[in-house]
Length: 127
Image: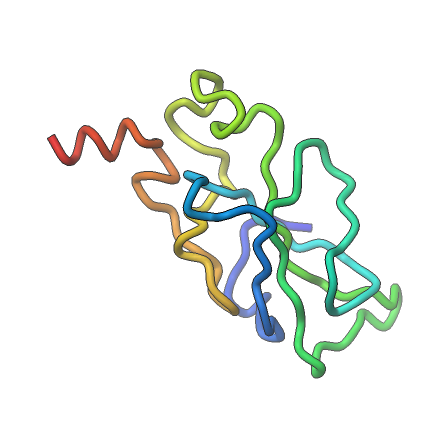
């Protein structure tokens, strides 16, 4: 599923559930995954870890062919900034990365100086 989302992809979101405190994360990756249920924690089959997910309202319809629902999942990979602060994303961020503080129900989330450049960017702009 594409990780570059629009608000039209999120029409039936009812809740965003965080498994980790989003205040502690510069960015999260977001993607639409196909899951068998509207609610509860979905299965996670990527490297890294799931840090949150969306639950859908009662009006969300499953895909008629697969019987699966499209739900947003928030995750981080082992080489992301939170695990390797001096690694690949010390500055910069993956394309699907957004600031978790800007995510809401039916709201995609935004790229911010913190999500795209890390704490170093925040320090530079405050100096």
